[in-house]
Length: 360
Image 1 (cartoon, rainbow, N blue to C red):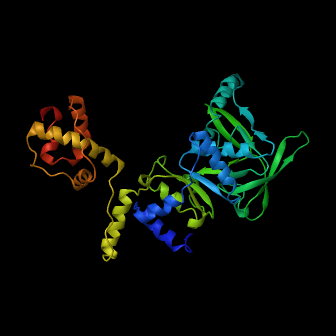
Image 2 (cartoon, rainbow, N blue to C red):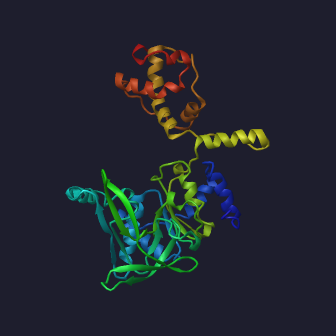
Image 3 (cartoon, rainbow, N blue to C red):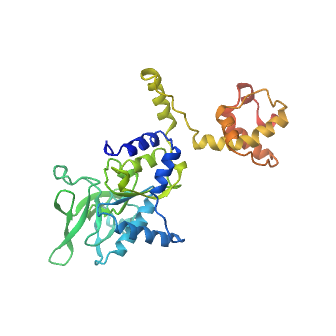
């Protein structure tokens, strides 16, 4: 385990992994949050980059979305005093020459989507001292694999002044990276061979891309832009200790575990470790949406069916009503009533499920 020397952090992560955040956990994580002085998004981004420059060189920023990583990578490159070096890909179109213009237009459309161009960008802007990541395996025996992070030390140029190779300092030693050639299809039977360096800026990377990493220092965003179960846990568990953890945004609601995973934990506990407590399965986002519709629907249902106490609400809905204030009811239109009916149907007793909403 990465955090074996930090017992408090290990215990915190063991709860986060299950989607549990105690008051103590909340306090610990809140204390690691960066306080920004700026109000605008651009001011906060600049503050973040200056803050990152004060941290150890190996610090990486882990973010939920690709758009966020592009913003911080662009800003960090701007702050470097070194000269920008533009790496332009060389494309060779193979196929019917009469379709070449169409192929060029297609290539132009793909410039912002390297997933359509074998993972190779048309243009890469870097500087000496920039942090980069390899986007494909080059030599596994030398550790030059997809995801390896290093720092640019030098640009090697050919007789024409074009960059022919890049010297990159990785964790263990310096390696020379050369362009690679990949072929991809742009139109039916029209192929492009692209020659480009398989690298991209890596001051900030997505949380998804960081899986498997062990970091001594990192900045993470676990705010409201996380979008899947376990994403916050993956980000937090990349760092080896609380000392090296710096939080950009923190939303306790972003910490969640997949219900099926928790159900499997409970099954194994009941079978092999009955001495351990069963873990509470939190309501999913979909369930919480249904619950919000529930207040409106069951009010309408009570008025229309006159069966206020002939059925019981699921425990998750009962708990929701105990924990929140019941909102004011708005008039139930036929459309709204039908929508509520459709989202809540899984919670109804069998005899109600058979009744169409227009017959209630």
